[in-house]
Length: 422
Ligand SMILES: [Zn+2]
Image (cartoon, rainbow, N blue to C red; front, side, top):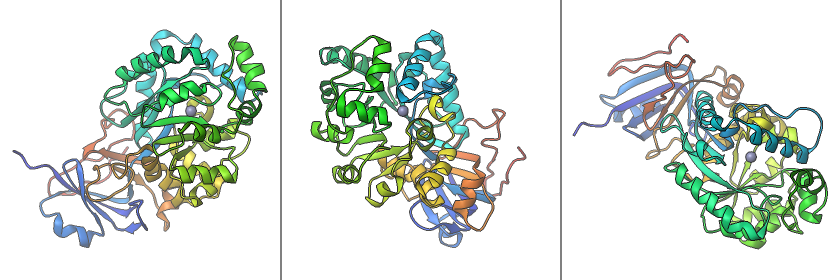
C-alpha cells in the first residue's frame, strides 16, 4: 500500500488557535491528518522526505467555521426600506414563496463556492428545501446540515416532523442536527419532538419583537407577521426565550443558540451552566436586532461562542471575515478573540471538538493560507482577509483554477513552491 503523502507547510506566522502565534511556524501533514505543529526547528526532524510548501509572507490558520448560514437564500434580494424584524421576516417569506422552483439547488452550490473562496472550511447550514439538501457539494468544504422545523400549531407537529425526516434523508451524508426555528415559529410540543435529536440549532433572543411575543403573545410578530400570513401564531412561551428552552429541556450540550442578543446577565449564566453554545451573527444583528449581542459577557462566562454569517438577506454576504471584523467593533473583542471564535469557537459550538478549527496533532489536515503583513499576525490577518490557498483533509481546495485567486499554490516533492501570481 502506498504511503500517505507527507507535506511540510511553513509560513511567516502560524495561528494554532490554541495559544500564542508562532512566528516562522510549521505544520507537518501526513495524508489527511496533522502530525506536528511548531517552530520549524522542532518540526523539521520529523519531516524528512516530506514535500515542502513554503509560504513566505503568509499566515496559516485553520479554515474558518461559518457556524450559522442559510445557503439556499443565496441570490435573493435583501428586503429594503424601513420596518422592524417582523416585517423583514414577512418579506423573506414572500421572497421564498415567489422564487422559481428550480433555483434552490444552484443557489446552494454557488453559495458553497462563495464560502470556500472566502476561506471557510466548514459551514453549518439551515435547510428547508429538498432540492437544496441534495445539492451540497461533496468536496471543497464540509457542510453540517440542519433541516428546519417550523410548526406553530400543536396539532400539526407529527406532520411537520415528517417533513423534517424527508429533509434529513436528502441531507445525507451532510446531516448533522435539526433546527427548530425559533420560539415564535415553533410551539412547545414541536420543540419537545426535536429533543429526540442530539444537536439542535435555534434562533433565540434575536429581536425586541421576539421578546415581546414570548412574554406577552402580542406585538408585531402577531399583528404584522401572523396577521399577514393568515395563520395563528404558536401559543406564546410566557417567559424569555432562553428560559423557555430551559424549561423544556432543550438548553443542554449540543444545543446551539443563534443570535442570543437580548439576554440578561442571568440568561448568560444560565446558558453557561447548561453547557449550550452560542453563534453570534454581528452583521445580521446590526440590521435586525437593535443592539449588539453580549459578546464579551458570553466569553467571560465560558460559553462556547462561534460566528455565523446568517443569510445574505440580513447580513448582505457570506463573508465570515466581515463578521469577525464586526465582532471586534461591536463586542470589543481583540482580533485574536474574533479569529478564535471564527475557527475553534465555531467548531466547539457545533460539537466538532478538535476535528476542525485548530491545529493540533491528530486533527484533520485543514489549512488556510492568508496573505498578511504586519507585526501582529492576528490584526494583519483580520485586516487583509485575503485567503490565497486552502487544503482540506490534506487536499488542495477544488476551486483552484476556477478563475478566482483561490488555491494557487502548487506542491513539489522535496522542493519549494511559491505563491502564484493571481
Ligand atoms: Zn438564521
